[in-house]
Image 1 (cartoon, one colour):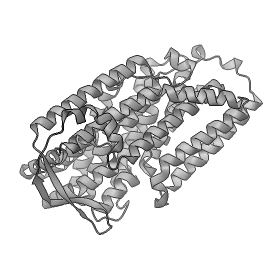
Image 2 (cartoon, rainbow, N blue to C red; image 1 turned 120 degrees about the vertical axis):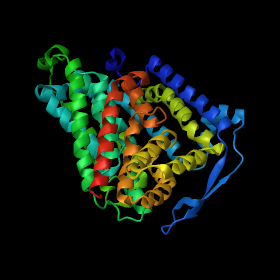
Image 3 (cartoon, one colour; image 1 turned 30 degrees about the vertical axis):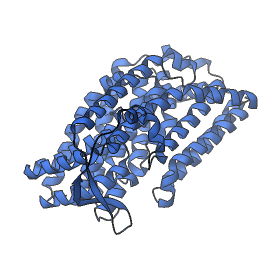
Image 4 (spheres, rainbow, N blue to C red; image 1 turned 180 degrees about the vertical axis):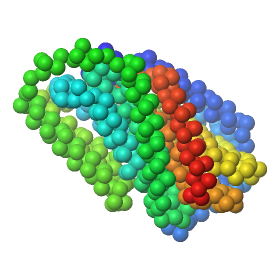
Length: 466
């Protein structure tokens, strides 16, 4: 992490190569699937709200396969595919973060802020860990923030290092926590809200099981992170010269500007939970507010406009490797859709459930969503594809739509912070200078414990008639 402490958001070459190899291997595996799985597609219909959903009885066989040249160019062709406006928005969002973060670092604001926080909270660092982790989980669970918290990940990672921990601890406190909260989904508009609407349920109804899930998952996550941090912590007195910190009025003004403007953006995001019209623009709001906060705070702290422009451009160029990773990961879904095999996989999975006992069906629904999330990271997109299929199927077995929605949220959320096809995870690991293989080695135990915990929650919900 020596390079990361020096500044910038340059993605480590080793981390980049590891991620590229993993994703390319998945691309090859996906192409092989298109050669052996027959083509098929569902018919689509409009629901009572005018949303496009799958017609449960509308599956038919079609010609499958994708030309080799199209597969090779898929990382670039995906930009022009229908419905990929979000992908372009994520890339633009990332470039803004890269540019502004480099300027914040070069201006000295980042180091000043971290030194100030360490001096203030160094003696109670585990309490601070609990608060930060809860904040990120709440952001994911209450308002569905995931991509939007990416600008905060490098800050938390740098803070963790300054507090005597390591980068993995910082990623665990931030994006892993956000993913867990997203899955618990107490009132996540992008998974729970959309899924309940498609299932014909009142939005955010019957939240008690989701609240219980949030508490249990938070406890599990905190235990995991604390145990890891205890094993790798360093005495804070040796890693930081606390007594040498001197307050700087210009830096303080810059920090106030940064916190105030970015705070206004986060407050707007919180309001999106109650104002549906804002929900489609949360990423844009965060990007714009982060841009304004970064420009204003660096100028106030004493950086010249010319230097701001130069360091911002350096930050943008340093983030280009992450863009390539995102395009390659996104091409996997594009390949399956172009080859007409995604619906075939889904159709076969739903058919298997017909021979299962009641208790196994709800776990199988969980598994279906976990598998589909590998190919389709978007929670709302998966809801439109899966809910019209799994809810009628589950009700045949006497399972409630509410429990299906919880299983859907679990399957969608946790794997977002494990699958290499999720662009937000790739971005976060790149910014934290953590290789994907290192992340898997760190997080697989938590993911395993979490699957056991959430499976038990689903079986409990089934037993009590949720």
